[in-house]
Image: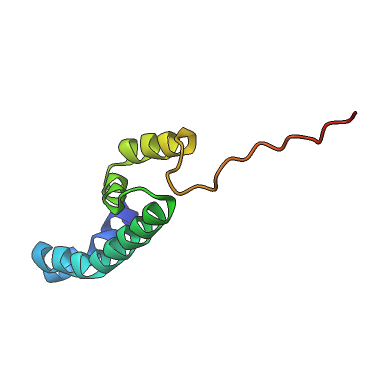
Length: 88
């Protein structure tokens, strides 16, 4: 019970609206930075940067990582087959 009171102490002191506004001001730049970084990673891999929005939902994000791991990446290195020279 003490932990809950400690976490919500600013809300009790300044009101719920001020607490919400403070968290919004602190978390929004971090969220935008996270989405920007993921969009750059997606674009470097050859996918649309809009795939970064999938990270806003944890179950969809887990499925997207799994799908990207097994998908053929559009900008990946070309697959080359090494054929040994013939011996006569």
